[in-house]
Length: 130
Image 1 (cartoon, helix red, strand yellow):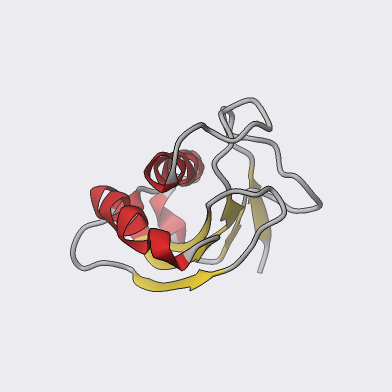
Image 2 (cartoon, rainbow, N blue to C red; image 1 turned 90 degrees about the horizontal axis):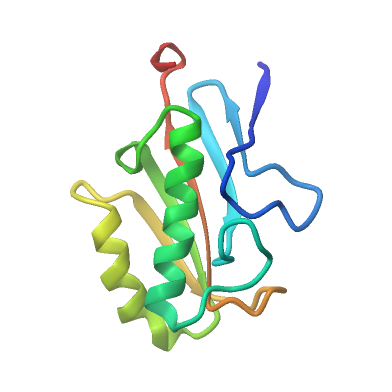
């Protein structure tokens, strides 16, 4: 099986030795995304809602580059700096995903960029989709 890297424009450069996403077979594995402003390494201003929205916009862009949409997401892993931000995160999450919602894990976890949220996803993309 080959691995095809996905390198979208208008998303922050990876902060380390990883790729934004990898297409492997019928799946796209999107690396953890944090809420930097496009083209910078600066976090967006605001709280959990603004940061969640920015992260999900990055993911949406990455998936579009790979020929997918948010509807193709089957698994979401979310890491909140403070689990008390769950309701704000969840409010924005529901703007990007619809029923049947993807399988999901949400945990409290610090991340090196001091972001309030980091999210990675797995999307299903049949090989003949594009």
